[in-house]
Image (cartoon, rainbow, N blue to C red):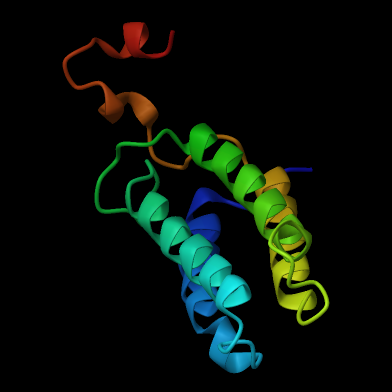
Length: 132
């Protein structure tokens, strides 16, 4: 049931990255350094690795799309668990937990192959060899 295209996934990546950076102000936890910094770090990291992923909406095709999906799952788990890992669960939980679980869900529902060909990752290697 993988129905989210890489293009749609890319749009979601950039929207979520920006929203995570704005989240401390939108949800009133900018005064909590741990909660704020986790949101900023994850948002900035998501934007960075999205810009470097081999899909339609990036500027450099350096990270294979499947690797990007794996990063999304790991980052989503980190974000979802961060209120307890960094001790701010008594102050704010929901934005981190919900966005983290959504990040995992989107990654799992995304098609595992980008709409554009992955062969351009290895311009010096013939396409058949690049797939191995």
